Each structure stands twice: as C-alpha cells, then as structure tokens.
Length: 434
Image (cartoon, rainbow, N blue to C red; front, top):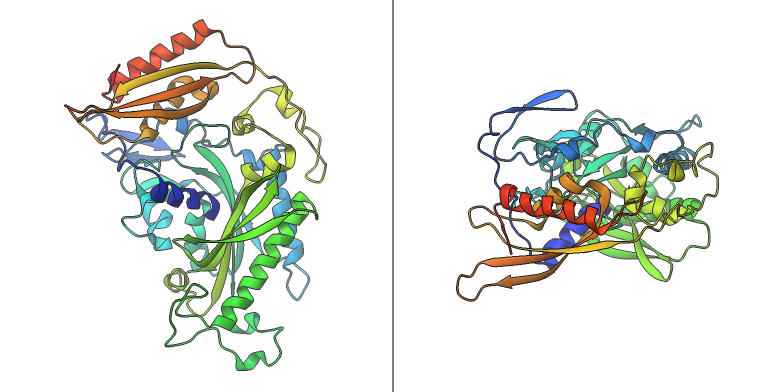
C-alpha cells in the first residue's frame, strides 16, 4: 500500500516527469483482451503488455516454501496473536487471493486520490482500458471491505506498477495492507475517565497532528497503538535489536502519516508506510462513526532484508539453485540466501531521439525492454538527456546492464538482443536510434 505509493510522490516532486504513456496502435483499439478470466474492450488507455499478463496467476505469496509466502505467514501469525476478541479468537480476517483486476473507482476514487495525482498516469499504471487496470496497491480493496462491515482485515496480493529497472524494482511486487477501525468505546476503553472523551469534534481544524474531524486525544491514542503494533511486527520479523526511526510523510489516504525506517547494513531503509485513515474514506464506505489506521508493507523489501536476497528478480526464478534453499523450510526458520552464481555483466548503451508524434515516458522504454529481453536486463539507467539547440528535439541515452541469473551471457548474444531493442524503439516507440 503506502510504502510503494510514497515513491511515486517522491518521483513526482524531485524528478522531471513525462505526462503519459505512448500512443496505442490504432488497429488494436476496440479489440477485446482477456485478463484473469474477464473480457475487456481495448481503448486508447490500454498499455498492458503480454509480458505483464504472463505474471498473472503466479501468486508467489501463497506458493508453498516461497520466501514471500513465509513473510505473509509471519505477518498473519503476528496479527492473529496481537489482536484477539473476548473469546480469544483472532479478530483480523485475511484476504490473499483477490483478483488484481480493479476499477479506477477502486484504485483511486474510493481512496479520494485527486484526479490530477501522478499515480493515475498511464506512465505509472498498467491499464486494461480507461475503466479498469491492474491494481497499483492492495489498498484498492480497502473501501469495499469496509463497506462489507469489516473492521479489522489484511489484504495480501500482487500489485503492478510501471517502474524503473534495477535490482530492487520490478513491475510486479507484493504487498500486505492492513486496516483497523475502532468505535469510540474501543478507542478509549483503557483510558481512565475515557467516557468523558470524544473521537470527533464539530469545529476542528486540520493540523500536522490530526484531521479536522478528529480530536487530538483520539488521534494520539490511535497513533500510539499503530506505531506500537508495527514496531513489534518489525521486531518479530527482524529481531529485537533493530535500530529504527519514524519519519513523518504524506499519503493521499492517511493523515498524519509516517514511514518506519530501519538501519540495515549502515543504511536507513524504508520498511513500511502507515497513518490514520482519512475520515472521508471511512465516511464514503459507510463507517463514518469510527476512526481507523492502516499500514502497508512490501513483501519483497522485507524478504530481501531478512533472507539477504540481493536481486528482486530472484523471487521470480524457477531455478532450483534458488528454490531449494527454501524447500522444506518453515516461516520460522533462519535462512540466509547463498548466491548460486556471479555471472559477469554486459553493458550496452542506446541513444535515440524521442518521438514527436506522441507523449513519451521513460517507463515506455523500460516496458519495451522487458517485453523483449525479460529478466536478462538487470538494470537500466538514463545517463544523458540532450536537447538539440536548433530543432529543440530531445534525445535520451540509456545504459543497459545485461546479466543472466543462470548462465554466462556472451557479448554476441547481448548484441543480438540489443539490436532487437533498437529495432523496436523505431517501430513501437517511433523513436530514431542515433
């Protein structure tokens, strides 16, 4: 949920962005596409590729003996033990097999994401058409589950986002997204003279510490429970000795909001995002008489830290050298990944003039490379941007790092792949290779 969404905001505010994805082939508009058993009409918003469609149904987070499944199991186990009802049974319900196909209403509107927010861009999302897309976060199911009457739940699943290419980013990743909403009685149950306190105030003001609808007392109690819960969760997964800090941040669907960062290998690493749910979301979902908190954690991020996995592509590997290290293990076992290979890199550059007949995003190029080279490309970086002083046409130069995870690539093999990418830049993106 929140952790990956935050990077979209950072990208928007700190880097130059292009507005939209490349145009669609006119011959494809109107043609039907089948996704997860449903049939949809293509339109000029469709930008989902066969490569991305190939990931649907893999469900790594529920595969036996997969490291992402171990992380899911541990989060579920923690919440089951942490939150129990009066009868001793867990009060959190878990949903880990919901369809990744969601509506624009679910992914954005239900979470009061502004119409102009960059996370809606075609350059950031995989759209099936203008009404449906592959969810960009498991938060997309939040409002519908609250509307069903659920107060405490966890959603785990695969999410899809057009992104850069390196060892820690992938177009498909997995999230665990939790929501807890409370009545006034539940908020103040353990507070002396709690019956004299209120969750809501009529003439409140929005500040950096609270929303206009909430009292400061209610917000601080929910914040304390939220942060205590997440610190205990992090300690249960990473160990009691972890060094941590809370960083105030912003998200479209929580306020106030925070990131939990942990010190890992002498660097601060964002572990998860969280906050007090925007009251407008609860009100719209039929829970306007309650206050809630939510958090989201990326399973890959957590697993890479816990198991010392250096490359996010490894989670999708079917190589026995990777999978056998987790076979017949349990979620409670201490496992440290041992590299099965250190094959050399091959590095090629590509420069091309950007298309003039359509809007362009670097993510268009990243998707193009993925569709041709798959996971053989370890990293892509934009190393130069040049604007011709006379024509004002823009050129990009990208460095592509090729490395196979299971064998040594020869430069000749890489050159063949690279030529295919150059040809596709001309044909698919309408760029001109220099």
